[in-house]
Image (cartoon, rainbow, N blue to C red; front, side, top):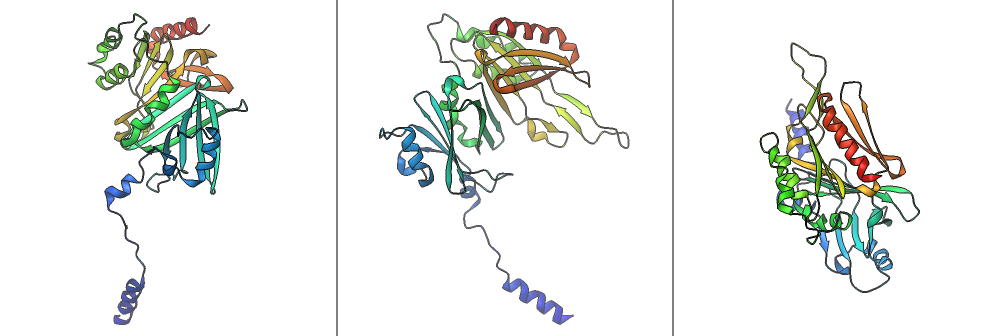
Length: 314
């Protein structure tokens, strides 16, 4: 018995246990996106390609770096996003090489930004330089979400204070949501751009589709998250909770925004799903589409929303 114990002790003594070299807060900082202020801040793998994009103009365009970080559930590649003239470039490090995708800001047909607790991301969809619709996603710690605001602003409508639209009055249109979903009310108010006119909006509360019950209780089941669909005179905005399941209460801590320019909407359609919900589909270029689920009792509101979208996109 003593011999076995001795052997076990010797193995533990010889084992190479790697302890974290950095404290927890420093490890968390490794997941932060970073603003590159000069070419010295740009990793070597991207530097030559970035100089080619800017035609060696000398100045560095607005550039944000997203790291590869083992704290993510799925470790992403190191990426870079920058705006130059009317173009948005996304570069990715793949096996020590830089791969790039370029879209003109005016041709991007949807932008999704998400922030759930510390998980943040941005997804751009649009035709690349060859005309093929591509999708680029960058992940980062949500603490650094503000670094991507200038990127989103290049795609969304520009503020227009000379339009005669009372911005305060447009934001106040969402005050009626204070009792039903205070979070979405605030999200909608801060999302509307000065000069943008709110045409219609529909709030859909969370819908739970329970699985078969066990011992008199449903232990799991799909949750269709709450969402707010906002139609303005310039874009369609979808604000939603993260899709979750019953044991994931964190799905409600944050939100996901999708911005779709009206001139990129090819068509709209609605259909009744098998579970009695109504699916509204927003059809975009390249056979892409965005779906939103609504309860059947909101049929009149949904029909009005679809007709309003169609009238603005004809």
